Length: 315
Image (cartoon, rainbow, N blue to C red; front, top):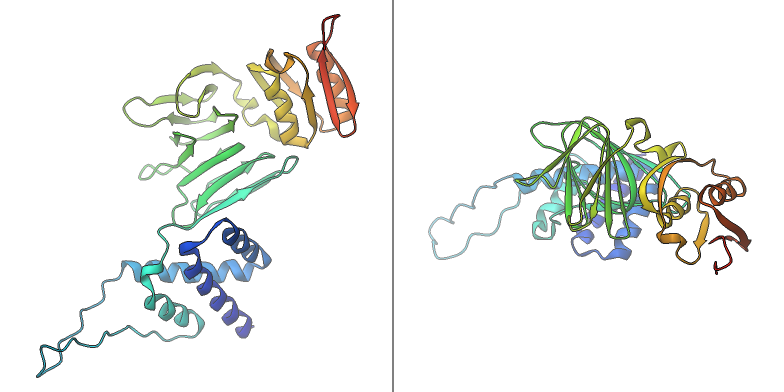
């Protein structure tokens, strides 16, 4: 067991140094290594913690050599003892300049897949399908929703609010359970409990339980609506609420949730839809029901469902 721990520590040290200049492939390999064994994540946490301590420690300047003030004193390093963790500290001390400024990593789901993430600060995040979230091991109070949809259960901290970055905007918790979707260049925020500040600052918009907001991901074209708090994050139970959103978003929601590929023909994808729809997750049941609800025809073409407008002029 000690040999395995030492091996994990050595590999963790190597990753800590390598991540300073890591590319996308390196990060993917690093995450795969972390997920191989709980011992790997534990070893990396120990190495990262030691690195933080070293980064914050002021080491004494070396004393000049007596009788030769012109000669530079040899550099002195603080040597540590105590096994594998000590070896990590020494190795990191020798190359402090390579310590990365941040330790960001991605958590992602495929269409039809869900995942829950628990952060060190007590915050819980539930990811819908087709979602990617960027987190920082050094600061669990900051996250970025790159794409998709997620429900956030935030442990409020008055000293340091949880901030979610979405495109060019930010959402900050005020003691909250809230849902955020980042799709096709737009941001949608809905609050179930507590409150959030959209674009915190002088022009912040405060949303409370039952409030929802839609905007471009640069903050423009902002519109506020209301939603029943019980429907916030309804994708977890298959209950989806729409308020004037185009049917293309309804089809996109089904694809993310269940991996069901729906193509909308003609102008059907732009038609606005308002209502609450309950999906079972069974495409043979849900797609015909959706077609009937919106007055469209449906057919299957291999693994794709095709919905089209009814009428003599329909394509």
